[in-house]
Image (cartoon, rainbow, N blue to C red; front, side, top):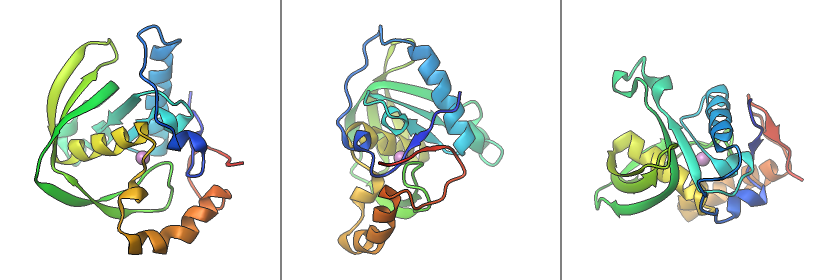
Length: 184
Ligand code: NI
């Protein structure tokens, strides 16, 4: 089932999300629906707050890029209660967008590598380094669990230039190709 996307302006996107317990109701079904929602919106990452749930869970699907990037074939990863253990000193700038901030794409500077501790969909613990593009997606999604969005990481000038677009978004003035939950 495709879930409606929560858009900039929804309070849940600004909440610090709660840890997920192993007995969280219908977790497998939720994860399945999140993958379906992500595929439907042609994104590469989706965090639970973006579908209205303030819990520490996000998914990454890079398989959709595998035609051009064969190294991402079958790259579907679920992250539960992730924690950043270490970030590289080296930073890189790259264009980001967000399904909750439709129509805005901006360069964001982030560490090139991240060491992440997390549970997978079977609640097995992993500690793993991610580099480059996966590291970027993971850091972006992990921000969502702390109520942060990529536009927060822009410089003051870029923020100022985007302000009216973001305000419009909170009033449901934007266009997206996927189902969205209207802002109140
Ligand atoms: Ni996002």
